[in-house]
Length: 117
Length: 113
Image (tube, rainbow over the protein chains, first blue to last red):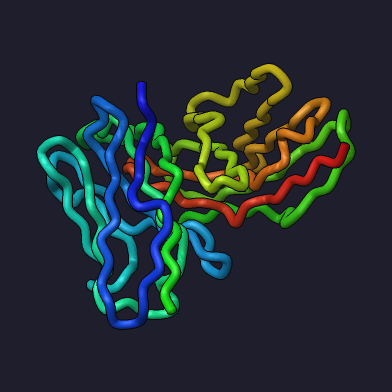
């Protein structure tokens, strides 16, 4: 099976611009989660999508948004970029068990490294 | 509140040495899951193991072994006979039953030939 793919792998943007990152999950996986990794804050959860609905959300400003399509592919958008948004953005996919005290194993993609100048 | 602590920021060993990476977690939940991931320089997080709170059995997979102790809230990871290819950042993570992982700050392991 192909793994999680993310495009693009590298992006350079300037302050004030917006950016869209894409993630294709492992075939059969219905849940996609996004994480931000920075040297200062480490790995932080952004949000999770399951069946085209946002199921869980981290503590990030509204400039960070996402969506999921019917084929489970997901996009993440950051508007009005700030210098502090420079980070490695990781996408993870899992089977997506609906509810209950269960959790899936998340498998990560290679990430998109965003640099904001 | 949930928290994962990896007190070791960086560990350096020489090839063939054994090395243990520590992970201490905090949670009030009775049902939770613990994970270890490896992040090589390429950046991708590679899944290593998952453990649920009901199962305290230790696990061995080749040169890797994991020691889960609920009494001390620890989930430590040991690499036996380390190799240069083991050099990476290792993350311990906690999940409470949703698909949100809470990560520790990571331990950078450098294995020198």
